[in-house]
Length: 206
Ligand code: ZN
Image (tube, rainbow, N blue to C red; front, top):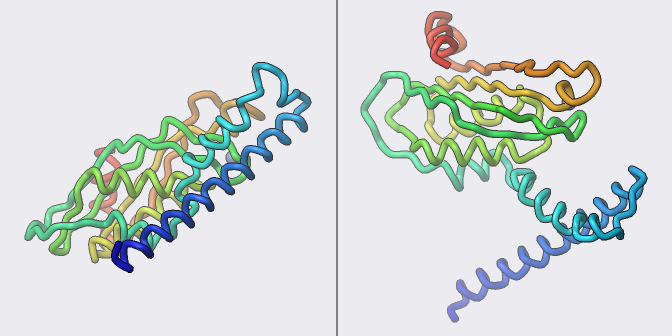
C-alpha cells in the first residue's frame, strides 16, 4: 500500500468511526424522545425504532456535514459551452426540514435558472446540489440562496435565479392546518435581479 493509499484508508476508518458514533448518539436521543413523548422505547413495536430512525436521520441530514463551498467543489462539474441563452432546469423534486419546528417540508420543487458565462452544468449535478442543500435544518428562503451561492460559484456567473415551492408540515399538520397551502419563494441575482422581464419569464415558466 502506498503512503497515499494508507492515508486514504486512515481517513476512511476515521470517517466510519465518526459516523458510527454519530448514529449511536442519534439512536439514544430518539429513544429519549419516545420516552419523553410518553411511550416505551423498549416495547415490542418500538424496540428497533431508535436504531432505524438514527440511520434514517443520519441520511436525511447528510448535508449538514458539508459547507456550500465543499458542495460546489465536489458536485460542481461543468463543461464549456458558448451559448448565452438562459438555461432553466425545472421541477427538481426535493424535501427538507424547517429549522423552526424540525418539521418536514414536502411536495417541494426547485427551479434553477442561469445565464451561461461560457460554462454549463448537467442536470444530475444540479439535482445533487439541491438534494444536499435540502438535507439540513433549513428555511425555504435559505434553500434558494444556498443553491444560488453554489451555482454562482461553479458556473462563474452572477446571473442566477432559484425558485422554491413547497408545503410545510408545521403549517399543514398542526396549528392552523392550512392544507395544501404552498409557499413559493425566489432568489434573483445579477441580470435576474435587474431585469424585471427576465425574472417574470422564469416565474411564468415554473
Ligand atoms: Zn416550521
